[in-house]
Length: 259
Image 1 (cartoon, one colour):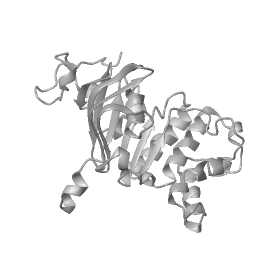
Image 2 (cartoon, helix red, strand yellow):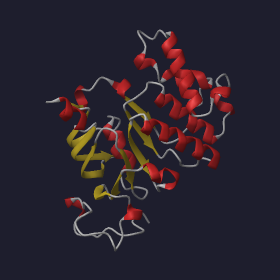
Image 3 (cartoon, one colour):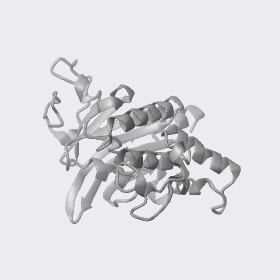
């Protein structure tokens, strides 16, 4: 493979992936690829399979069939997790365990350390991540004293501190106040400008819309649309410019897709 081919090869690939939760089919044979430098939004109504798709991509939910690859390596063989930053749906950043903001963010740096020993570069990376999300002044505070939006900033800083090439974020704006939404959008813009590849699970595009290169819409565990974000796909879209996944049948793409 040439250098150019390596650079254009997908960072993340799911091929005909199926997955179940509690014995119930959730993903019904989805195909998804994310190339270097892309910002891809995974959209759909509640229960469409968005979160399951990203959790399957990082191995939290096992695929019952199909293939998952990260940076060209089958998921079962992938070990270089410092290249991947993951922000789950917002919960308490410390899971109820007393910890400072700095301690939580530092935990995301462990994959980059040598035997868990923090060097100057690691401490500087923690400081940079905190500054990126506007939480440097709260570094010594307990996470139990934070608002919901501040919790989300801490989770994002924890994902960024390993300086990942692929950033996966599950509903990063859900339940977050406007001030934190603006901080998070600015943080993401900076990561994209620096060349990060981003996969976002979203219920709606909101303030992140200008960053989105491509939207993949799920419905009932199938890919309904892969192409321009739904707002740009309506009855006046040019024929042939939209990709409708074969599992979706002949249902047209239309405005109001997510409702």
